[in-house]
Length: 189
Image 1 (cartoon, rainbow, N blue to C red):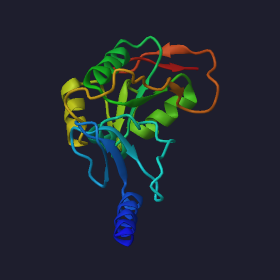
Image 2 (spheres, rainbow, N blue to C red):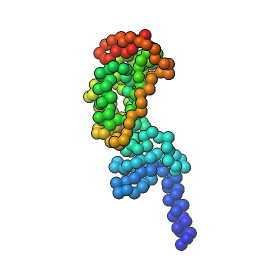
Image 3 (tube, rainbow, N blue to C red):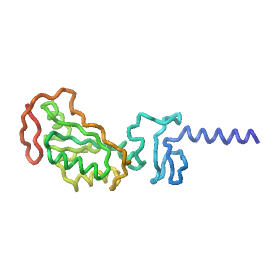
Image 4 (spheres, one colour):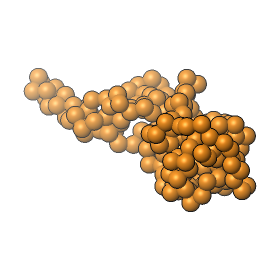
């Protein structure tokens, strides 16, 4: 009998060790496996030893949202004093999309933005490798839908997007605004 219990425990531990995710189901029970249910809460990716991966910034996201964010991360490129950029931020927040924000404030940033999106119009949203410009809610919704992002917000109430970061490492220098066709101006030196 003791031997049988030891075998059952060993098999259960082996199953946990090979699982990719840990979650809490709607009844409050903890589950392990490769495919968490759609209504799972507190989905956590496990490393190969079955330990929780605490470096995962999206650890508290529901599985469906977390999966889309891992496969097709969203980045919003903006600049200061940009009404379309603020509308884009609001759009992503209202849809419940976890995103990172990169700011464009100098010539080096503008060159990098041109490489990423093919132009200097802002805002720009990238979903994975696909760039969307200019801000168009219908086109942006279609791109997010195709990437598997849920239509309604599933973000936890406590979720805060990371602080905007400069696009390039170079410190911004004083600049004057130069209008860009059909979009917000990009600061130029």
